Amino acid sequence: MGRWRLGRLALAALMALALWGCGVAPERPAPEAETCRALLTELDHAIGAATHFEPGLRRVDGWPLLRTNRFLASFAYEELSPNARTAWLGHAFELARNAYATEFARLDAGTREGLQDRHGFADLDTRLASCFADSAPPETLDPAAYRVPDGYSTAARAMGLYPVTSLVARGFISGYRRDMTARYMAGRATRFERETVYAGPETRDASAPPPATPDTDALGIPRLSDGEQDALFRRFMPQLAVEQRSGADRIGAPLLDEHGRIEIDTTRPVVFTFPSHTRLGSRVLLQLNYAFWFPERPPEHGLDLYAGDLSGVLWRVTLDHELRPVLYDSIHQCGCYHKLFLPAGSRIDLDGLVGERPLVFALPPGLAGDRGLRLRLEAGTHYIIDVGEAMPSADTEHYILKDYAWQLRLPAAGTVRSLFGPTGIVQQSQRPERFVLWPLGVPSAGAMRQRGLHAIAFVGHRHFDDPDLLETLAFDFDPR
Image 1 (cartoon, rainbow, N blue to C red):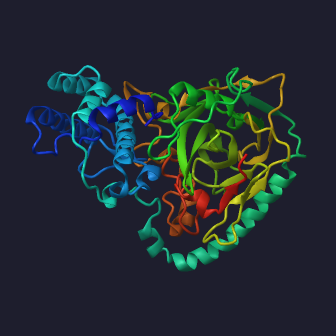
Image 2: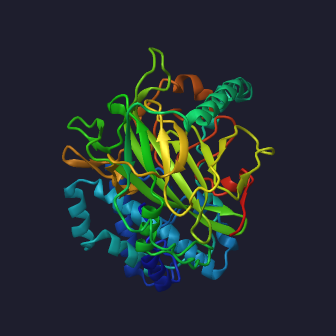
Image 3: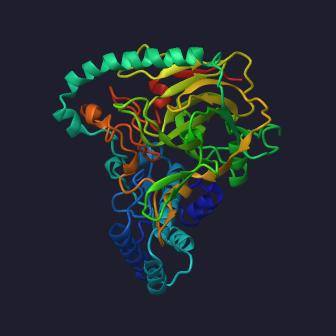
């Protein structure tokens, strides 16, 4: 996965006019196609035997060098213009290349060296780019071949009599909404006896002039260099003011101990970043995602269904075409507690929404939108109870920014493992609530999970990365 390296992507796409399939075109000279096919066949076998393919992406049927996420899968390939197809294929290859890099890194050294020796490459990334550039694009591609699976279990909903249990759940959801709304409404006036303030690395990006409006590719996706994208992440990185009651209230970096158990190293505050995209009408909007971890959610009482190892929050900033924030939203890394925060000029109409409603809060008038905001988090639950202007603090601790993919290749007793595991769900973080909520169809409800796997409604169908989420929520904003 990783960040989309658009310059390299465009170069590879133009070299081929797109895709590859690495050996499906029978009229092509055989040697290069056969070499690519042999490499990919053995590579896929090694990954399947020793580790796992990245669960947050869909591997396109018949085209091993293509993968999709929900956003990319929302385009109808066969209806795209030639230029748009080239862009689509380039993005799909970039997802595949980044995923292969992570999966290859999780193989043991002997397997990696054997693949390199037998297939004559020193750098897998370069070899895959060559296969992509030397291959022919698919003339047709059935949407079923690249559609990302639904994040809900239809079988669980059927066995759990979902039409009935969802009605029961609505009452609990109403109580949850009242509780969360009361916490947030009181949050600004709440004073923490002890708190730790975390801010991002010291940088000039937050005070620099706003970046120029970027060009877009044939799909409407903004074109940004790695440096421009990094500057945006630094500009809008949040300040975290976390109430302190125990060691569970400090953010840190995940690691694996000698027994393979996950720990959060709170001596190394880290926030993980990744870009995403969403659609609003004919516009494609860039989103900046910031994920951070706490060691646990400690129990508040003996039968706390929501307590367990690891607790995490994901904060997202949606930018307009001029790269200015028009929406902020958050979830916990289980997919729970979806909250939207509206700056001035943005609005949401939930009257026609089917299923569970997210929580929506208006941000204070006059809030500066040219830098990161301050998030105040409760101890223990790590609920966001206030969002406002970032403020200077004498005892600020600085976190570092890391690419989200860093978590997918953690050192572990002489090998490399993903934090999330083959299903994308952190098994160590499972919560007792899953035994109560399973009829609503969310696999292992309450457990922390990987990007691309966040179902965010117990009643209805909704994912955090749905490309039409803003349209579903009837979101709009005033142009500037």
